[in-house]
Image (cartoon, rainbow, N blue to C red):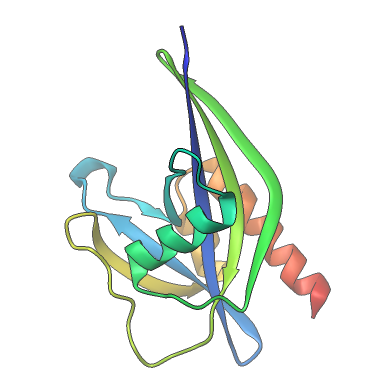
Length: 142
């Protein structure tokens, strides 16, 4: 029997001089310490947008979103007896001089990066596809 797990992957971004900069987090998990967006599980009975806001708040301390964008990209993969479904979203926040408050037990580092730096920094193909889609949507909206 396969266990089904739902997760969110959230690409937090802010505009600096009308150019999107994306928040990347580096995992504190040693060998798996590559750059990634905010991500985490959707709680039992929790709505998608509530999970998005909770994960961003818990992982970065950012509590305010100007806009949450559904990237309409769902990733599915199976690992052993677990099937994971990940919902990809963009999360627009306002620029601030305050750095994100990351949990050092979960994240070892963070950085804001423009697309040309963020895209190649993402190790997972589905993360690169999602940030590419978000960036294209933001470019089309400008």
